[in-house]
Length: 211
Image (cartoon, rainbow, N blue to C red; front, top):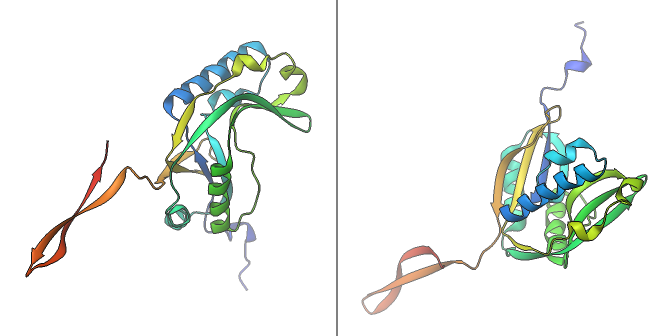
C-alpha cells in the first residue's frame, strides 16, 4: 500500500480576507501624519506606521474562493444605504498589558448594523468597537506621555462601500480584492414613457447620477 504524506494533503492554500470601511483621503493623510508624530514622541510597534487608516469589520481565513466571498458580501449589503461617519476625537482603548490610541465615531450604530448583517452572512458572530486605529499594542506607560487633544480629529466622511482585502497567510501585505458599493440615492432610474395605442410603456431606462 502506498504511504500517504499527510503534510501534503492540503491542495488549496489558505488565504486571509479582511473586510473594512475606508475613510476619505483627507482623513487617511491626517492619520498617517498622526502616526509619524506619535512615533517621534513615544515607542510604538513599527508596523503601525505602515497601516492605512480604516475601520475594521471582519477578518477570517479560508481556502481561496474570491467570487463566493464577493457575492456573499454583495448580497448581504444589498439595499444598505451609504451613511456619514462623524469622528469624535481621540481615545484610548485598554486591552491587557497594552492599549490602542484611536479615533472613535460619534455614533457607531450604522457601522454596527452593517457589521451585523455581514457577520450573519458569514456565520461569524463577533462584536466590534468601531474605530480608526492610530497605533495599537502600545505600552500603557508610553501612552501616559501623550496628550489626547494633540491627536483629536473631528472630520467626517461618507461610508459608501465595503472594501474586501485578501492575502496569502504567509504574505506580508493585503491587496484589494473588491470594493462593494452601498446603496446610494444619488443614483436613480428614470424611465422614459412612450405611448403605443394610447397605452404608456417604458421605452428605456436611463441610469443617471444626480450631482
